[in-house]
Length: 283
Ligand SMILES: [Fe+2]
Image (cartoon, rainbow, N blue to C red; front, side, top):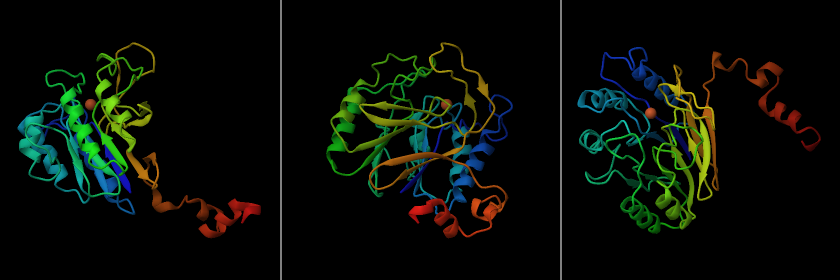
């Protein structure tokens, strides 16, 4: 199973630019185009929050226009720039955000790995929240299928990152999440965004992967308390590949020039011959 992750697209209204100079809509379209051209096609695309820069009807309409063109199933969660009520109004009937008006969490059972969307938004500020009610829902949902490998996706990274603006919340904000994960060993991976950089960590011994933004990056020298600097660069699409017993994560870099620099072509042999040569005496 292949999962493509995109995060923090920060879409703005049609005709506007993010911060006056970043075409975040074009960058998200480019990222989806990379995904559409993958062979084989990914099973699912997860968009892990900060879908828009300012949550209003027009921004979500611009996002919806982009999402409507998609060829693979897409699922959404809110980030601190989003409004859960507006997202529910816009997307709950599309299948991309299958949650209720009162709860921005849901589970997806149609794949080899169970996917569970979590809500870390504390409406009104940028900090994360994961209270007992959200944790109880997660514990109950996990208990229904204890033997199926499961992936959680949540906007804020639930670990101490060493990046000052990510660590602004009290470090125990994820204690309920950590407790639930520690009691359910089918959880294999947690996906996040928010940091606008690539990072990995752990919660309750489970790997956490933080994907880069499709719109722009933020500098974050680990362990240094300074304001982040905006870097005008789109991050690559991230692929999470389920091998059957674990996840392997890698950025996806599309091939340029029709593969003329493929190593078998450079060597002037077939791929099978090159593999034989690589194996040497073991061939
Ligand atoms: Fe963001």
